[in-house]
Length: 90
Image 1: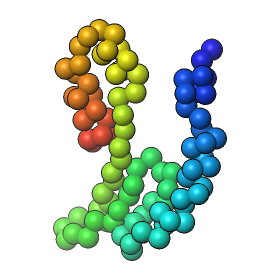
Image 2: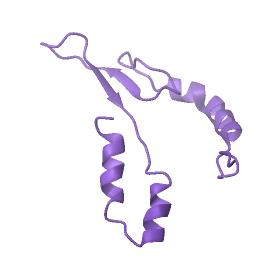
Image 3: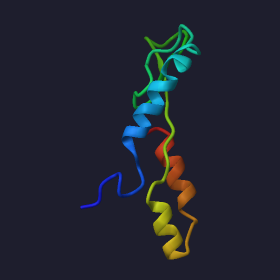
Image 4: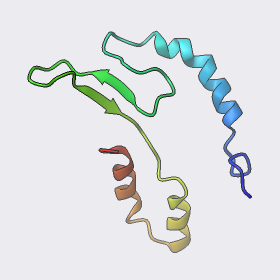
């Protein structure tokens, strides 16, 4: 079985890096921030009239191993669409 570490992903190193920047990241928060570091998406209070407690949720993602498949197939025309689909209305 392949592990994340075998694939080059070091979750412990990620956790250590996030712990080092946690307070720096929090220092940038404004009153509208509703989520903390590590959430699936960044949530922000959206001040607008006519909607009950609207929240803007933003996230970023990557196409992951689909890029390896694209290179192996010599076809990259679907990668951009996949990236947009991962990030918009997810």
